[in-house]
Length: 501
Ligand SMILES: NC(=O)C1=CN([C@@H]2O[C@H](COP(=O)(O)OP(=O)(O)OC[C@H]3O[C@@H](n4cnc5c(N)ncnc54)[C@H](OP(=O)(O)O)[C@@H]3O)[C@@H](O)[C@H]2O)[C@@H](O)CC1
Ligand SMILES: [K+]
Image (cartoon, rainbow, N blue to C red; front, side, top):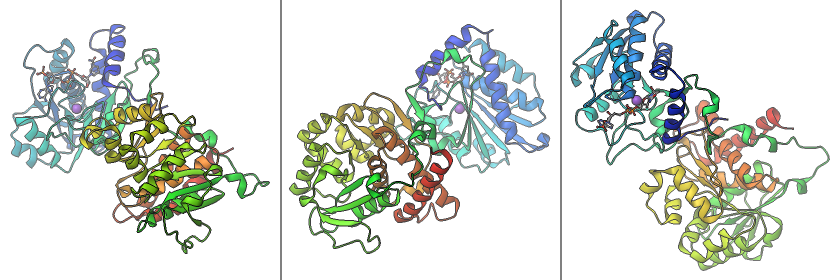
């Protein structure tokens, strides 16, 4: 189910597979897979296609040389910009170079103006793959920038050069990477293609396993999110049920001047199926939500927390009252999700963190990178430079199911299992979308979902709703968090119709 492998794991698989195969076979297969992916992007009459192949000094360059030879044999006009190795080449790369040299591909001495000024049909990026050691600098940096200025398709072999395969961060500081429209990645899928800058730089990702025996692949601890991970909890509703069958959600937040956040979370909880939803305010409760009168607005201090799933944090503020409410919520036996200001209070109060970590039932935390950084005592840059690592660290530290939001949201469990989400788009980079996510996950918890599955499904549905709205033209520019609420309802009902029991 969509496993993701670290650089070290891919190297181990490749080594074991190569030992059982004749020399150079894996590179030949990678080159063939690269050529197949490239041909999919070329016009039917390949003779008209002008393809620029960038071949770096290592084995990624070897893949590119194999690809170039195949494309030339297929009739494309291929220009190779070749960066020979500084020291000894691998044998398979030397063979690939020979193959390219005996094909009709042209080894070109192109300057940047020619790269930028030619009407290429496709650029194939085989500069660097797993062996990138440092930021692209000098002429290579200028070349990457020139390629990024082109409007044609760009196919990255294994991964976009300049990107870290494990983290999805551009190798920096102040690094650059090739901005690919497509990536043909080899042996196994890689986390860096799906989080941080990966989603923007890798484009559409296709995995070529290179026919490696499945026995060489160890079970992965990191996956892409998949409906199969949570579909058994998608239940059709039974006729003989009532509002008490679908749980209570209490959203605790709404300090003075911040009533919108808990209302967004509460409306989402209601529209995603919770039986009763309370919007609880730190002070000055609204008499009701006129846009959603089904919600019950109350003062938080008076509320009995025992019979509801608790979503604490949206607009909670940082007052002593807010902190006391958080302490009560943590001490309760109820299912708990902490977001926004609750996370900031936690970061500021080690005693609350200790209480949370000892909570027998665990919890869900939904930090954005700044909130995660505060909880870890790190910087945002440190969190973003290893999102999966940061989410796992936080999950272990606080015994929590952590949803680290951002491009390629990471969901990590205390036991180290982690998932990167694949739905969602930049429309979600707007105010209130986090409140919607917390209300949605809280609603699933109230309906009996376990913490892990509620987090996976919540993140999936939230992103899916945004994707559908963007397809319909309501975003990504200007989509509002409120618009997600009915779209989530539709997405959830469709999923239940399709997968539910
Ligand atoms: N092994 C296999 O069987 C298979 C491997 N496969 C393919 O091989 C790829 C891995 O190959 P790889 O290990 O040779 O690394 P790769 O990414 O080509 O770069 C290393 C070279 O780059 C150099 N260099 C690094 N950073 C640099 C920088 N910033 N600026 C300038 N130079 C820099 C570095 O030199 P050095 O650091 O020593 O100076 C070295 O010369 C993998 O991603 C996949 O595509 C597939 O064919 C399947 C089978
Ligand atoms: K590459």
